[in-house]
Image 1 (cartoon, rainbow, N blue to C red):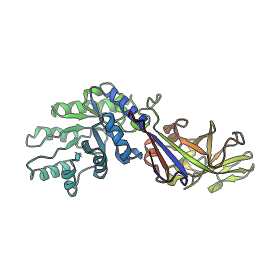
Image 2: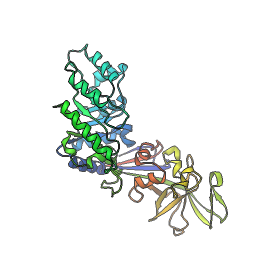
Image 3: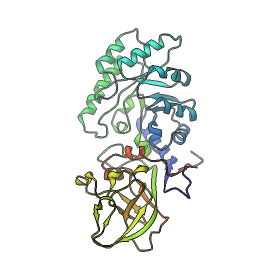
Image 4: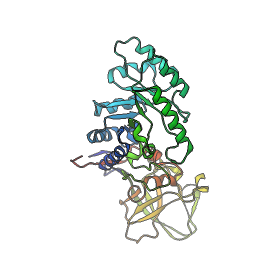
Length: 380
């Protein structure tokens, strides 16, 4: 299936392999056993489209989804009406009718939210469910450990249906904070006995003992991102980003390329100018020169075309990016051809590192001007 811009008119294309995404989720589900496995589909399924990702995961057996915003939860509900959907980013009183009508489940992470939910729920005969988020070391969302223990001890309080925390350093499996957070969560589980619990995000799934908790919450690893640092990525690549070559030109030795004249040519250079830029989510920080990042990360982004990697030349601009194709055979590349920006040949996280960032940001920055192709076999 295809969506987005007309392929005859678009400057680039995104290919999303839903079979690979499902295979990644299944691998994560296997590693999570005996825990169940949910799916984090916030930010429009990490930029890939809730409307396409959620049905594929539902068909594969995923029954629980996490989103950041209630609006995202409604989009999940539209394509998976029987799913269990948790909303992570806080609760506000004006949103109560939405939760009542749609069966979304708020994740409450402060005493103020708990008090508000209690006061609203007190007026109902049938209590609405909620999850409790406890901060065990991230210092982002969540009640403190002491607040959570006090809440559990007060029998007047309604019990949450899910107890959760979030690991701050799970991608670094040797970091001491992991053990401290896990030990704190053990105390919480004892206080909230009989309640479903969740601690493992994508990298957390690869820690030992994850199956002790009833629900894992993979995100970026489903989409092909690296779940941990310092090792080979066990996930299949899901997303391929390609840009169309607009023009091939020759710059002479000593001339400069692009804004700021930051790239000075050391030889006669063939340049492929491509229809992609930071307006499309191909980050300016991946420029080959002329950005502060190049002082610490020496090499900018690369593309892959005609069987070879080629470097970004000069600055990435709003709509255009140049690549040095001098080392390719003269007839190997023509205007209208596509150059891979990340995918099978340029791993997502390698492309992100060249831009001084992480794969999460590249995926969630993808623009709306691409032609999108979704690949899915009939058996999945």
